[in-house]
Image (cartoon, rainbow, N blue to C red; front, top):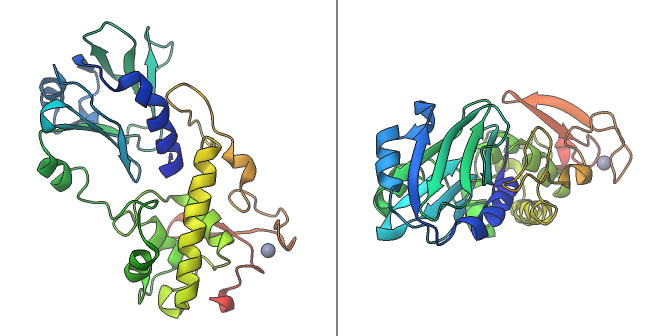
Length: 275
Ligand SMILES: [Zn+2]
């Protein structure tokens, strides 16, 4: 699933191709991917100009003329392809064409967990697509993260994946950030020292920034809007490295299932009693 770094790379690669262009037509062949419904998306986008590209967590937000917003969530396998002709690929469910007759935007989604939504104003953006997200993982302050986690009794890894608490971190970057911060994925925030939560904030920022610099992680079939795969998966310290030596202490990396998600960590560097 694309996480914050992958979505940020998609945003950066789309920006020069979309900002300033006026939407002509939206074709939806799979209605459930258009919110609130295909007609609202078609009518809302038609004739509006894209004025900027933004991102909150894993959600792409495209501000439009007249104060409206177009939001795009890539879900598990969503891809945005900007191309003059329809790509030779299955699972293209939404096609956007522009008044300039230039390259179209194609939304491809094999697993169909993504969506596109039209919001007529900021209020409907905040009460709609943004309502279920906490602060963006790159914008949250160390104090706010500590405040949101402190006194919680659930395993820290599970809390990091909760998009209501923090938006943008998923399975890969939660495992990698906890490794950097030397915190066990099973540790409960209530048992952690405040300094450890500050270290965790720093580790999340570092991990996400490095991943963005390397174009994200291409662990499933994620590629960005220009069709380029990221390379950050080659920098992973623990994620999907079960049994391989920890880069710090050479202890074999462990894998457990936590909250239904595979979780990778070094049982020595991230020993539970350290937390
Ligand atoms: Zn280690």
